[in-house]
Image (cartoon, rainbow, N blue to C red; front, side, top):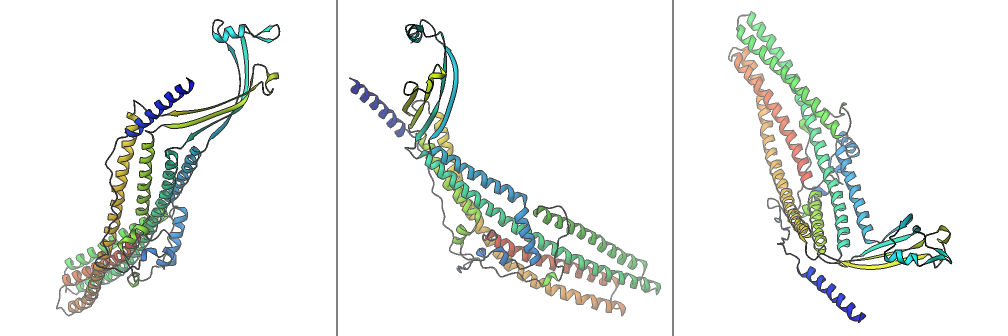
Length: 477
């Protein structure tokens, strides 16, 4: 009879487990697309500048020192490092879920049961010692160990641990991506600062030339060769250039402070070489193959790891539908009198139990969690594909930008040379009374503007090289 009841209960448990397992809702899945074009602009060379370490890519010792300081002190990077520690602790937490929990219990209390209960009636007819009844208020002293363990039948806990490990690796790649952004931002700001220094030098030179021209106009006016209008026009031009000088000085201050902010320090002068900016030659960049972006770019690797973690989360959420097996055990000593507490085996108490628990009727919360996990997995798929596409587009744009900027720089160099020569020609013509002051003035303005634009184009060239180095995944190693 007893065996028959056991079989009935076991059969009921199996039926419930089968119901839970077979009644899991299905959701549409989507596999990520990793396909990328064979090359960039029909280029199929596998040599990739993104694999070059940033200390080798940047040759300016001042810039290298700034980047090194930024990596050590930048606050955003330090925040990311704490995210890595958080993820590392999550691994320890998930690992602990796989192991039995062991604790201790020490307690003391009083208990009075009703006389007309089974416990009260039993106590009334029992003597603690011969001739001495059990008192109505009975003390209770106990201490011992207790353990609990959930058998990971469906790999729910293992998958949760794997997801935590994957997210830890994702935070490491997130740190690398922050470093690549930081390196690129410091380098671009440094080149912007050098460009402003050279623009300031040109404006100062132009102010000196314009001041000399103004003095010449005053002499020409005294000789009645020009009117007061010419003098005022040249004077206004000098004032305009001086105003531009202060604008550049303000931009220099802001650029220096931006670099100091990236370096995690308060404003101070930035050490740099203020030599000829236009003589800087951008390093040659080789884009390699688009497929290499998947292994080089930290943001793509981070998105891939996030996707892997999201897939594991789906498995964990799915396992919630299945029954879980829990085992608990306790062992210790218990007695109503401390003098009896350590008597063995009379005061020894222990228990061992196993239970199988699972959802049966109201599973809406589990379904919602499962649906959410599936939706997050789809989000991770789309984000992964978007990150790959964004990486390819960034590289393609910068390759085109580098080519077009080189052509633009060559043309602007010729323009600057032509306008510089035009200044001397216009001055000679003016002295020979073959050109008026307006032509001299316009030639000087055009020459100044072309020189400033040439420096701006050179800065854009250097920024484009930094940006493609960043787009190829360089800068984190």
